[in-house]
Length: 331
Image (cartoon, rainbow, N blue to C red; front, side, top):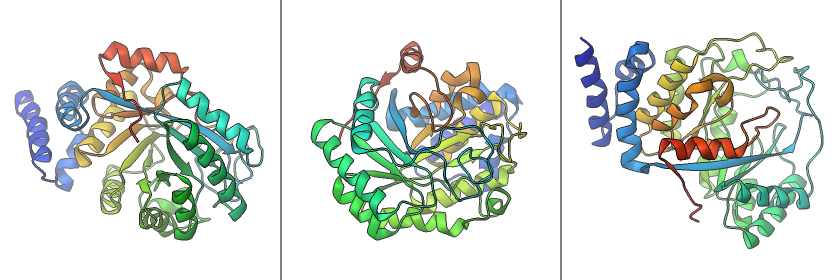
């Protein structure tokens, strides 16, 4: 029986490498796999990852350009209006601070620098602030710039693109069917439209998910299919870090083994896309973090928005110990 299941994962790998797509039932079987199948499952996922990315790992670094002060009611977020989490709150950082953050990203060997701001969407003034900083960064450093400024129009996205922003992140977070359980201050369609606006503006779309918010395996499949339809180039896979003071503070649905299955699932479903282990990596994968890189090919280095990550040198050592290498920025 075990041999048959092992062959099943290899069959999946061969099929997706030949350009075929897994059925819903086949994809769900990855999420529902017995824990004893983790090693052969990751071995098969690594075949797909290795074919497209070899042993390279992309590093990304976040700067929280505006913290808190957000009118949205997203249940997972410490910066939301419904959160009582004791976080630092401040308005948009100045250009000097944003540029210095980019220099720190280079020191940490990150190839992508992510400028992230809380709020429903950036004002015209905030878009101009980001654009001015990006122009200076691009003139000085070989960094890919990703902006994450909430809901954005095609016109604002074009202004960011013209300034040098190569990628824009706006996560779907959850499925259409589960969306209202997480937030009601904007619609699922608002999120989809933002990703579409970014693509129309000529920016590479980055959109991902948060797993562990009470969704079902079918919800995860639906998220994945939506991302396939949007042709997201980069897919951050976040695992809920249940922050005290948020509506989801008592959620505790995850364990490291399930997180590994989720990463394998996204590799099979999006074989040639950047799969990034994102927020919640340290607290949910814990001692199994390094195994996630057999499926994923990208991580954040350093801190997240309002939660701490590992120190950069620990991430570097983890990659080196695995026999993998940090991918240098190639613009």
